Every structure is written in C-alpha cells, then in structure tokens.
Amino acid sequence: MRYYIIAGEASGDLHGSNLIRGLRLEDPEACFRIWGGDMMQDAALDEMLAGRTAAVRLPGGVTGAEPPSKIAEQVLVRSYKDGAVMGLTDVLAKAGKLLGNLSFCKKDILEWKPDVVILIDYPGFNMKVARFCHDNGIRVFYYIAPKTWASRASRNRKLKKWVDKLFIVFPFEVPYFEKTGIPFEYVGNPLLDAVDSHDYQRPVEGSYIALLAGSRSGEIKRMMPICMEVADTLGCKVVIAGAPARSIDDYRPFIGGRKNIEVIFGRTYDILRYADAAIINSGTASLEAALIGTPQVVCWSTSKLTAFVARRILRVLDNIRYISLGNLCIDKCAFRELIQEEFTAENVVAEVRRLTGDSAYREQMLDDYADIRQSLGGKGASRAVAKAIIKELNNQ
Image (cartoon, rainbow, N blue to C red; front, side, top):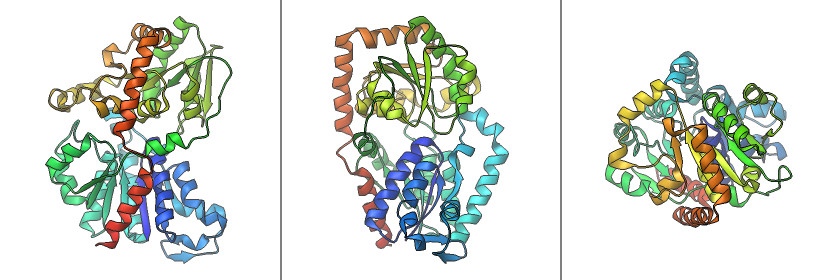
C-alpha cells in the first residue's frame, strides 16, 4: 500500500520513523512519501537503497532505476526543519510560507494517489490536510491526536467529520476521546521502544547538567538567556542537546565565551542518560527524560501575545493541572514545572540544586517515573499501530 505521512516537528519525525519501520514489517510492499525529517527518510529508505528501489512510487508511476539521491528526493517531500513554528507570533510571521506548503501538499497528495494519508501531531497544518483529504475521498488517519483535552475542543467536531480514525498514545486520552464519539485506538506509547532500544554511550567525561532548550528557534531564544544565568550561578558544566532542526549558530550568540558550556548534536538520549539533572523545555523531551530516569525541571515560556491567548483558551481548571506529558500521565507533579513568570534563573538554580543535592527528593521522583512508565503500557507500540492501520485499511 501507499502511505503518505506528514510530521511537522522533531518528535513527529521520531514517531514517524518508528511507525514506518512497523509498517514495513507488516507490509513488505509498502511505499512511502513523507513530510518529516532525516529519521523518517532513513526509515523509508532502509530497504529501498538495499535493492528494493521498485518500492519508490513517483507521481507518474513506479520506477526501479533511480539513483539513491533521486530516490531520497522523491520520498522526502519537505523537511519539518523548513516550517517549524511556535505560538501565534511565529504563525503570523511565516503565514505565507505555510500557505504555500499547504497548497503544494494538496496538489502532491492528489498526484501521488495514496491509499491513506497519516497525519502525525502538528494540528495547525494537519487539520487542514485532513479536511482536504476528506473532501477528496482520501482516507486519513491521525497518529498522536491534537491535544483537544487541553485547548480548542472545537476541533473534536472536525476530527469526527474529517478523520477516519485516531491513534492516540496517552492513557489519559482514552476516557476523554470516548466521550467525543471519535473513532480511536490506543495500543501504547512508541517512546518506550525508542528509549529502551537506544545504545547508550557517555557523551562527555565528568558530571554535568543537561539542557534541552526546545526544537524551535523561538523556544531557544526564550530559554537560553535564563539558562546561561543558571550556568553562571551554578558554575558547573552544562551540556546542551542540540535540536535536530538547529545548528550551532542558534546557540552561539547566547553562550558567548563561556568555557563550561558544550553543545552536542545527535546525542540527546545519551546526554539525558548520564546527566546529574536536566533543564528541559516542555514537550516530548520531558517524557523521554522520565522514561530514561533523569531528574528534571521543566521550563516553559512564550511570547506575551501567545501567553495572553493561551490563558483564555486553555481550560486548565476544568481539565488539566500540568503541561508536561509525564505529569499528565499520572495526574501528579512528579517533577516541577516553571511556567512563564515562574521561569526565572533564581527558581531554576534552586530546583537544580535540590535535584542534585536532595537524595530523598530524587528518589521520590524516580518512583513517580516508574508509575509514568507503567501507565504507558508495554513495548511494541509502533508495530501495534502499524498492524491496526493495515487492519483498518483492509476492512474498508
């Protein structure tokens, strides 16, 4: 079957790559065309470049004679690195480019004629694609559903109308989506496979604090100045896990001449595994840290405009008390969240010192991490989702 898969962020690239591998195991003749990143491209090309070039389906038909570079171009349509945005201000600034990508995506889907379009998170873009697919009679599945349990519940009506099936990844989403009437399936969370299968190797010698400042430029610009103050106060070594979509130029202006700061790309899991503690921008990374077992503090800050809008659309008092996925999984503050005004150098320094110096505090956090892991089910979620997708397609 032909699978058109769209992911717009680094986390989506990770989940998409594992899903692609699962689909290959269940459907050896699978063909892929993707919007994502290097991990999804590598997963899609693993067997093609080993001799199965016939599995590359171009808009005009199927070819088995294309060179590897040409095959790669036809599999990866767009990189998420070109269009990642955070918050309302980023969306407004990049509106023209996003609209251009959407127009091209619609045309490309029609030309490629997939059996199904699989959307991974990234709702600002993917919801529009879902409507287009529905209007054109193309089956659409949504993997890692929009977080309508936190905000914009009006999207549920659209999901029910435009999406054939949701594949959700968090246990707390089950009772929520049961009330919406949207067809869904939950078979576990794919991060367990990614974390547990990694070949861990120490990235640097000695002790250090890990810093994950986010994957988007806007996140880095808001995180880095405060975190550099923290590094100066603590006087310890800080290892920054460079985001896949970024380069050293995104970090260098904030680091300046500091000798205790090191940026390493492509080693996020290793950096987390061997860190004494981690300062993490809210997102998938905080859940990864919990599964790896790294004591952490989550920090989140956005523009005043986005914060103003968020505080009026989030129904926090009615539905959620936390912003971090790990805390949401067990509905408990396993690790502290410093949000907006609370995200100060003074608060982060105090929390890091507690994480590294209070053994009882660390042990309680690790106990809560065990509960988070248990809540996510067992291993094999990516392949289980792939099986469910293929079963659904065969039952159409």
